[in-house]
Image (cartoon, rainbow, N blue to C red; front, top):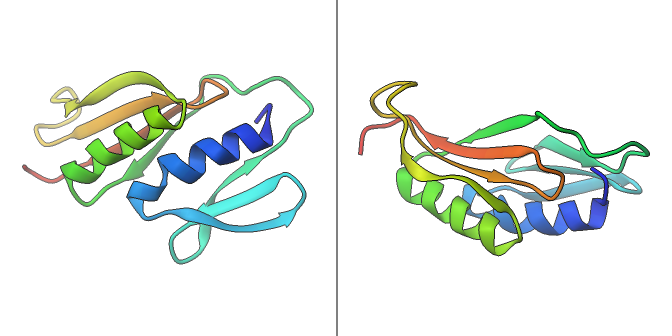
Length: 114
């Protein structure tokens, strides 16, 4: 992450609909997000922003995918694919994509039928 505070503000809001929250910051500018335990980490780096990174979070239902997309856009993310079925993956693949402050592709996806 090129700006830890901006990324933290984005992920605090974008991941909330998925039931994830910042659980710990064990050292300065390093934070772990999760539900029961931290499994997604962000950190300040002395290099430029990452590119080409794609992270997908599984959702239990399509409404949560929609809520993730809305929250991520409200947090300053850029739309990279509004919620919808992506049959190229499989008939029930329902996902939404948003670019985070560093341009990383963040997705929420539900694999269940409507």
